[in-house]
Amino acid sequence: MIEKKQILKEITQQYSNHEDFEQILKDFAYDINLAKWGYLFSTDKFDNNHDISRKVFHCALALSKDFRDYIDFAFYISKEDGLCDITLAKEAYKLAISKVVLLRDLRHIADMLATKKDSFYDKEMAKKVYEEAISKSKTAFDFVAIAESLCDSNMLNDKEMAKEVYEKAIKSCENSDELEAVADSVIQEDNLFDEQWASKIYSISTLSK
Image (cartoon, rainbow, N blue to C red; front, side):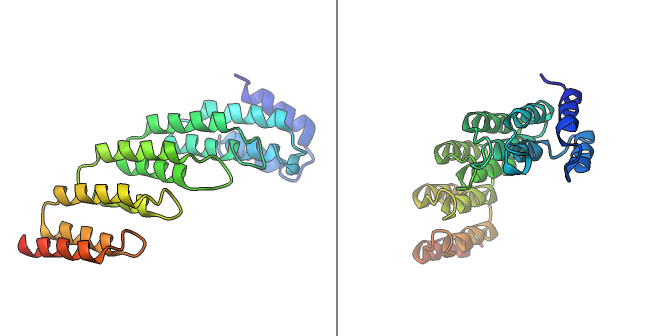
């Protein structure tokens, strides 16, 4: 691994007069925004310095601990106007998944992977992460949250898969309030927009009161 001290020495030699130099030193001192700087060094802002860019990215990866750090790394290293390194981005997402503790964070990773943007995204990989999240879900609200993500037109927009998850939500409902919450979600235009099915769920919730 290239030491941070050596990277800073190279940055100082080349960019001590740059308008962002002081901010770079501050961020390096606190080990923050390193992936962002790795990206910026690869752009016109720093004369497309890919050599320093990769060194900063390697430093950022070595210092990553939380799943958010790996997502941040993946986002910046794969930006189309930067290094556009899809391979490392994908590996970083795998590391992010391995660090997740909370179900909502796993769903967040799936959402990030499913959303088209100017950096790495992978709908097939996203689907697998959603499936993992589904397998770990226990409550109706867990399932509803995933179903709503699956319905999002900016992400997978997979209504069939979402319907299967809503069915799991119904089966896991413990009271009428939870059934009504599922129905409220199903009927929304941004979700399934299925008034007929929602009405049936509302009917079940009434009977369970």
